[in-house]
Image 1 (spheres, rainbow, N blue to C red):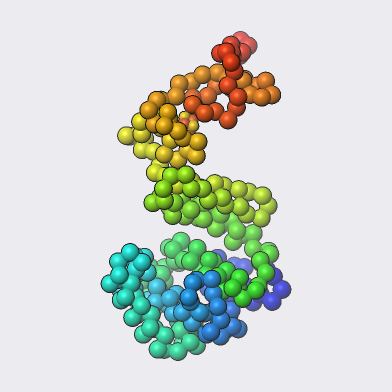
Image 2 (image 1 turned 90 degrees about the vertical axis):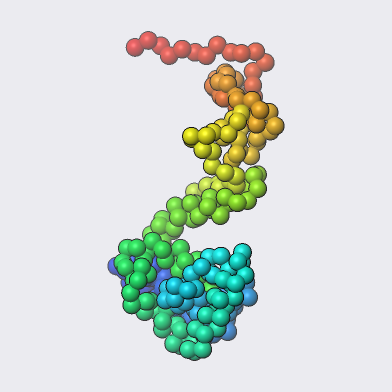
Length: 246
Ligand code: SF4
């Protein structure tokens, strides 16, 4: 926790902690503070969070509003209606959460809310000059695999060749790549990894790579099934060393 952060209850589920802290930020900053959600103030963001959990009609527009204009317009109208309650009441509705429904079920609620609340908490913190939090290793540990999966999901519809590098304090890194996951039932032609490989070439589409021995720059022997291995291919095939009999 960084100096100035509201106290948090370490025994509470992570999504509940994020919810409490975000609402305290809303109260500190008031309705007109910026957020990292483009075009949204703290009031807009609080109304979005209240609506998302409490009005099933808003869900399709929140998910698909950019692609399906009527859904987006409906959600905009519901958002404006939510804001008619006034900022304090809307923040209170975020703080208490809905009385029933999937967003009220412990466990399930954490699964569907943790990323939402952690990301929007940071949207508010960072837009208002607050420094990165410390002492939240449990939150980082919980979010790391979720963000990794989310990055792959977001990149599904992006043309091949785009990479997103995820890094976390402490040095862990992962790279999510665009392109379809190869189907194990109907693998792609040529190399079965080519839909997600940043080094894929036309040859990789046409020709399935066969296992072959290569020698790395340091003289180490490798076996690869790749047309463009990152180790240097030997000029002549090498004889791999057979394991000594037991
Ligand atoms: S053959 Fe090698 S370079 Fe080509 S797609 Fe497969 S893994 Fe990538």
